[in-house]
Length: 42
Length: 154
Image (cartoon, rainbow over all chains, first blue to last red):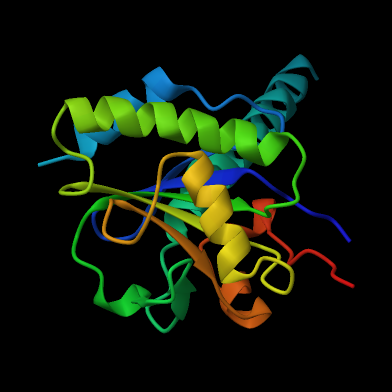
């Protein structure tokens, strides 16, 4: 069975997926995610 | 004849572009948190997705026996948490959710141990660690192109 671990999604304030920010061995870019989050805040 | 080659090439390029847009922008944005699911936190509190206040949320899927990739990603989230705390928005405007995809093996105690590794010592700290039934786990917002299947157990 396929297992997708370390899968991470960023969701907006209404619970909608904004983007996938990590999956498996792909890097989770802290700086990029931080910027995206700060831009989403009111 | 050359005109038809040009038109065909344009159509192919358009199709490729539309496919990229569909799978990278449209389809992920169509996914959202399920409002009819209630899970349990690592410290035993019910967590109802239908009752959540509006916040930006980072949702991660892990299993605690995962040898390297999961803890590495969660460690990056911990670094991000520290930056967001410094900015004064973590917990108030931003929440992290970590969900086990192996609820059969990941007991509350195992999830607590995993959470403590990243500095989370209880509920109400802006970062919840959740477990639920396999059906509840499968309802999480995972666009089909990255469909998460519950880990085989036993």
